[in-house]
Image 1 (tube, rainbow, N blue to C red):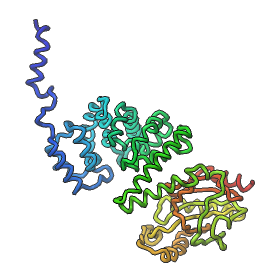
Image 2 (image 1 turned 90 degrees about the horizontal axis):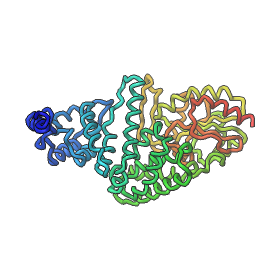
Image 3 (image 1 turned 180 degrees about the vertical axis):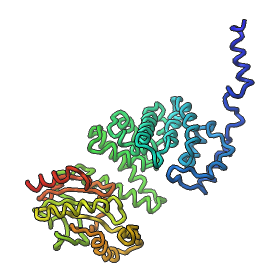
Length: 428
C-alpha cells in the first residue's frame, strides 16, 4: 500500500517543504527590476580592479535573485557590465543557472552557453601557478562548449553571441591549434555581415589566420575577406566615434600590409621614412637602403612601453658583442604625441603629453641618452605598430639580411636563438 502511495507522498512533500521545491515564481526578478538595476549601474558603475567586486553591487542586487534570471535579463546585466563585476559567490550561482539553461538546443541555450564566458572564475593576484592553470583550462572548456553548441548558428543569425569569437583570442594559447573550434567559427563568419560587431572578428582573424593556424589557405582567405568587408561597413558609418575610426583604420592597414598578404618573409623590407636617427650607423640614413650590405636587427619600441625598456640591456649587450661585425642594431619608434621618462626620478615614469612633432623629435635625443641607448635609434613616419610587419604589440623584433630581405619577423629580444640567427646571417 505504501509503495502505491509513494508518488503521492513525494508530491505532497515537494509541495509543503520549500527545501526541495523549485524557486517560487514570485521570487523571479521582474523585467523592470532588472532594467532599473542595469540602467543605474551602467550610469554609475566602475570597473572591477584586481578581481575585487564593486561593493555597491550588494545593495543594487539585494532584491534581485541572480539564479532565477532569464537569459534576456542576464543579457541586460552583461551589457551593463554587472556580470563582470560579481564576486565569486554571485558568479558561481549564475554559472550553475546558465549550465542548466545551456542544455536547450536552440539559440536561447546557445546564448546561455556564451553568457557563461562572463562568469568563469577570475585569476587573482597571489594565486599558485597550478591554480591559475586550472582556471584557464576550465575557461577554455567553457569557450569550447559555447562554440560546439548546436544553437550557435541561430544565435549568431540574431546578431548576438559574437563575443565567442573574442574569447578565442583570450584563450588563444589553448585554442589556437583546435582545428574543430576554429573551423566551426570559420564557417560562421558570414553571420557578422556588417552587424556592427567588428572587434571580435578582428581578433579571431588574427588567431585563425596566423601562420601556425591549422586552417587551410582557403579558409583563411575567406575569413580575411569577410573581415575586410565588415571593416568597410563599419568605417562607412558616419556616426562612428573618432577614436574607434582611427583604430579600425589601423586594423584595415594591418590586413592590407605585407605580413598579412604573405609578402614579408623572403621579400625586400617594406619602405620606411626615417624622421630622426642617431647612433653608430646613423650617418645620413633616410630608409633601410642605407644599411645595405649589413644584417639589420630591428627592435620596435615606444617610450611608454615597459617591456620594451626591459629589453634595452639586451640590445646594449648585443651592440657591444657585434660592434666589429657587419650588423646594425636599430631601435625604431614613431611619433606618439606623448613621452614617458622612466629615468627622471627614482625610476618613476614622468609622462609628457600633447607634444607636437617638432617637440617630440627634440626630446628624443635626450630620452635616448638618458636610457643609455648605445645602438642606433630612429623615429619613423610609419607607426611603431607597423602594419607591413604585422606588429600588434611591442617590443617586436625583425631581422633583415645583408640584401635587405626580411628573414625573421615577430621575434622577442630575449629569444635564446637570436644570436644563432644573427651569426648565421653574418656568415652568409
